[in-house]
Image 1 (tube, helix red, strand yellow):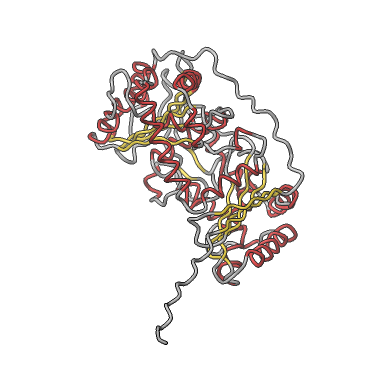
Image 2 (cartoon, helix red, strand yellow):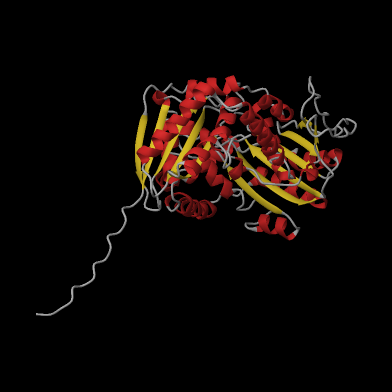
Length: 481
């Protein structure tokens, strides 16, 4: 779960989830269809879990891992292919390649001409997209349940025969560069977020650079480099295929074997060996002059353990305590009571490797950076010494449960999350125990991680400076002798 639910999760109706929540909502367990020879049944947790899916896992001879999660609550299916490649697999001077392939994968394959992937999906009542992060790239479709075969065939065709031509490469390089201009250069405060990431992960390239890449590397990229990157990572034995929604598991496996079974594995997937990230031993500071920012802002970042580390759970709750909702600590103090900030955000990045805890504050027009910092650090000190109240702990657990469950509401949302757990941690079933791990966090745990990680020597700080206000025009003096 990410600690910035307002940006990363969408509100939904629980009845569409096809889940059984226990014991909180007191619903019966979801029925478990009988296991078949095609796929393995879900693994039953050793202890009762708050959430349970019908998860079935399989693996083809070519190494493709499959996760099936049937749910007949709505007549749709989602197909998501998650590749184990992202920004963290790139090397200096060749950043942005994973993001480039997010675009290249829609440029045609052996049986699907350029532009037809979109047309085939949308003309059959579906939607599709792809996303890139530092840790993975995924491509997905959601369609009426009758079109499962189409989605599987489309994903298999581009896995096996993507058209990496010079024309497509040059076309998509230009598209990605324009996206960089639109999403980074011309977006207020976005350059400062990238600068903060560079500071927190300084010297640790897998996360030091943004997955979107940069202009210089895109300009220098050569077609042979791009093809080599594709050949190394976009193979069945480096991917997970997830199908969720209204489908029959055995029929789905028949289609998967038919279309993906002859995909050739990559015999030597490059091992991910990023090395150890050095512990920061002094505050790092930067100033970003942002011509698109209206007000000053301050961004703070601290390196923290990876997602699913035992200490990561209390750090996520700490982020919620500080910045989730209008009644959160920093919003209540800095925005509502003192009116010295116009906006607050606190989050964890949720990296598979070393992670980042971030606090960002937009300074109110009537206030100053110094006033904001004084109030913010006073609040952090209070959390470290007294922690959340019992009432705050109850509220955190309630909001956490709502964010977590609502974030799994749609077929495609569940497919993406199950795919990540299978890819990152080796078993999609681990997702069913996550709420229990969050609910095990105590007030003392939150105080401990706040005191351990949110310290000045491990802090990176970026101050955003907006352009100076234009001088008022002076009226011409009246003439006369």
